[in-house]
Amino acid sequence: MRPGHGIAVLAESARLGLKHTLGERLLLLGSFLLYGAVMLTYSAVFRAVGTSSIAGFGLSQANLIWYMGVTELVLFCTPTFQFREFQHEIHSGDIDLLLVRPCPLWIVKLGDGTGRFWARLLVLSVPCLTLTGIVAGGGFPGIGRMAGALLCAGLASPLLTASLFMLGASCLWVRHADPIYWIWHKCLFLLGGLLWPLALYPAAVRHFAWATPFPAMIAAPAQWGLPGGEWWLAAALLHQLFWVAAILLVMAKAGNAMLRTIQGGDAA
Amino acid sequence: MTLPAYVLALLAANLREHYSNAGRALIFAGFMFAQNLIFFLAWVFFFGSVGEVQGWRLQDVSMLYGFLAFAFGVALFLCDGIRTLPLCIQDGSLDALIVRPRHPLPALMFSRSSVSSLGDVLSAPLYWFVFGGLTVDRLPVLLGVALLAAAVLQAATVLTYSVAFWLSGGGRFSDQLFEILIIAAAVPQHGQPLGIKLVLFTAIPAGFVTLIPVSLMRNFDAWLLAGLAAAALAYAAAAVLVFNAGLKRYISQAAS
Image 1 (cartoon, rainbow over the protein chains, first blue to last red):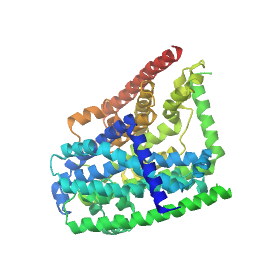
Image 2: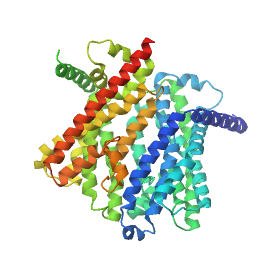
Image 3: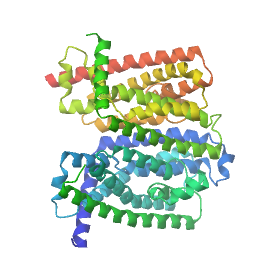
Image 4: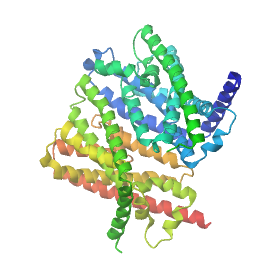
């Protein structure tokens, strides 16, 4: 397949994913309500934290709220149900129809996931970050930093989509991929620093977390909401770019392995 | 057949299904146990850094997670079928339950059992006794309070998924409303502003699922326990009323 053809497929899949998601108004409303519930409840917890206990980490209560505002936005933009949809396509046999296309399925899924992510980001970013600003009561990181956070969130999209694709595809070998998905999801929460910055973690756990791709999916965009030097943001960005390249390579390999398994009839 | 015997027969059918694939059941329950522990580690690291939050320490959050895990686990292990209500409305399979001589709600609720929720139920003792510092002699009170919390959670689940009677294509929206309930119950609520607390004891009864049970464990109060029992009854009654109203709407729309 020529690269130009692959890019065209990716773009068209993204366009369809975006269009499909923009039509799901009730779900988008539900996502905003869920985001609101998270921010309202957790912000009260952060406001109850003693300022002296977090000042040592260079953080304030408003920093914690803004950090979580961005991590939750990235999470809510991710169409995690894609994993279950893909698993269903494999179990039901619909995958056979998807595979007759003249392009690798992983490119179609990557485009679709990216389109869905960006659709949700376009719709949810302003109301969600506005709500975050209201509950934080100040400490706005600045337009430039928020723009950086949103761009890094966009970089997280292929990482998350690729992960969901591979998790869904794993049901070819383990029959039910749900348990693996649960562990991945909670590792995303824990090692990705979803609830609070990794700076609050013990040093050994923090170093281990940064050796995994999870911070690139969640913590990296949210770093833009925290005080700190630009060098740290640059390092987090490089970390993201490395993992995007690595995971897309693994996704392509997984797509080929999936095709061989289905065509060979060796599925679980 | 009396209603209790009918419910027991439905439960037995679900248990037989799990037993027939015991290996899968154990794997699902085990992974659910592990995922709960992974998530709880985030709170371990948080309290390791900040110490306490308005008087609450890791032990209190651990008790909270124990109650949530138990309530969620019992509710979904026994009555996960209610979460299929949107799909049943959409594909018309609810009709098969309506034409039966019994009220469709028990059959719907007990039509499915989530085997992974067993992992949640088994997580509870870990959070209560290992992380929470409770002693085994408090088990009778713990179980009584936890079962009341489970009743509130199940009633709230029925209320949440009954929304599907009014919102076409609202299956995933009902799932999102249910997640709001779980999220609200999974966060320390004692420091929430008054407005949020009001919501947590009315529209989203998360306060009855975790805050009240933890308060009872910290300082037992018979009146508070009575209040929790009354809340469980009230939400159960509300759940039946709302479900019936939705069912009436569904039947009238099908007839027209």
